[in-house]
Length: 170
Length: 203
Image (cartoon, rainbow over all chains, first blue to last red; front, side, top):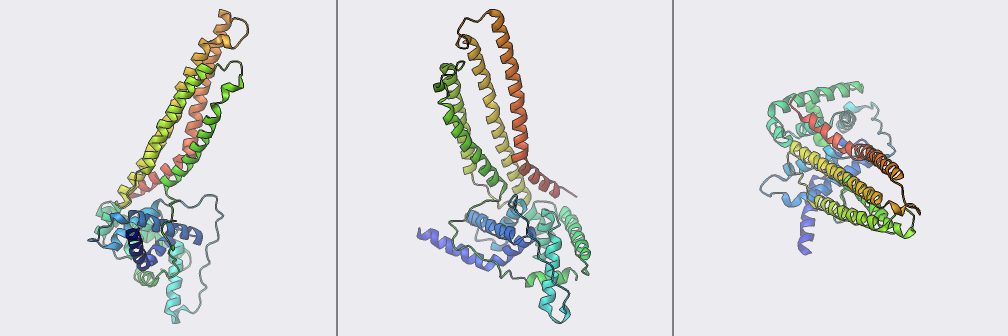
């Protein structure tokens, strides 16, 4: 029992450090706060269930990204649930003077646009934003490096067009 | 905005709103395809167990045409078949699915898990059909249970033909219903995962 508690504590400590990235994955894959919360919980559950397979020799974040994205990619949102409205993007306030407001605005446009990408394209964009090389992305997705390059470029072009469609310069 | 600026905004998003569950013991999987499949099938099996339990009392109603021996022979075979399949489903669901594979391998594993599950479900439903046939044959062989007076050969032939027609119609209805239900209730998971695998194909 004590071992289980120690293991749980160690796991929760790791989650405390990495919860931000899981939250970001949830926001990329789900559009409503309720679905984002469900996905967030599901990822934590799947990580906990697979925790024994984590080899401490490798990087925790690499292992975590793989489990989290594998979960997000096949996640099913609740059926027959009333879809709550997506929060409106912030108005064009004087963002130039306030960098944090500017970043918030950019992220709001990004999260709104990324919802329209396919699940695999979302995974590609995520790895790209996390500075993974084509080779690393290919290994995590299980596809060739060439295929990764082509698909990532397509996903970036699509994302750019979607953000532009929202009236934001990209 | 360009991708460098987006990256900078992305890095600045620390996800402070995220709230971790207080304990992990109460966490449950609810939205994964295999979990959903299991949940739906569990409901069906509970319903089936209730129906089969009630069915056991059927001959006690003493309805003419329901001779108890063929009925209980069919009923025993039905229970054995159900237990066999339920054990298989239980073992299947106990198997832990590793989601630490690459996305493509993980999707293949989920895809074939769903496919296997659906095939097991189909085989269970279709295995009931020969039992119905056997039951009908046993009734036909014991036609005197139907009528108070002995059955004439001509009438017997009419009844046999009616049974054969009823059997064929039943088989067609069972096939149509099972296929429709599989596609409606379970096929959607297989289709969605299949679509994801298509997205991973070479560009």
